[in-house]
Image (cartoon, rainbow, N blue to C red; front, side):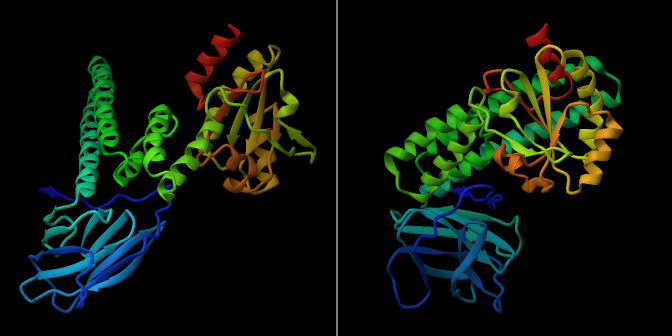
Length: 375
């Protein structure tokens, strides 16, 4: 018996629009879904919904008796995500494959956090196990974060450092447990959902191995194709990969390319005049550039500004004496999309051979990396 929590938002993968028919009429084909609504609203509806991409499609309604009892039949042609919507107050989410025969559900029906019990769906149970592991990770994280904040407020540096170390150990343990649940679930769709809780770059090796499970059993399934496409994009920007070229106009209108700087260590710095953290980081970058500019070190500033006036003024105000390019298209910049930049500041360090050496370097981490390279 498993309590089923509400699905978290789907961020990147495209859900398959499987053929589904929910019948509250005479047809009795498909998976029998029966249950009890403890607090039914007689003048409102229970909806059968299908999640497709970023949208939710209502495919039918379920009739229920005055005592809250209901029976419906779902004809499932392919594994997919479904949701039962009780009066727009409570939602029960299911992963169904078509192999199930009967599912029983008990809900309160009158509030989002009400009782929700599902029996008979193995894939839904797997999803819940993954959600439970993630909930524990987040709960432990919040508890230790709160303790660290309190220690810092109390000026207890020693305790603060102890909590930081404890956090790292607990987080590593919880992430291992989460991955174990995801690995155990594959090739259920629950595992692909669980990938949302991982870092596609940090956990690339694990997710790559996970994808092999799907390629062996569900190679043609849209979920597998979507995951493979996502991984292919990540691999293109992995440390050790060839850095994609950038060729954009400078403030003077001349096109400057990343490839023209090959042979140097190049820091690609995504920033903007309107970005306060970027502007706060600029003095540190200026100091480091002045220190290493005669040692085969270049910076290519890629602005995500919208106007040339703001861009040029920020360059002058902050004394950014390196090369700059921009197409003034904000986050729709060709370079930002190529490098999957959805927040700034963002950096990529490129080696003389044109390969990616490191990502996300700022402040002390940037200083340490450059000291490692140049001494």
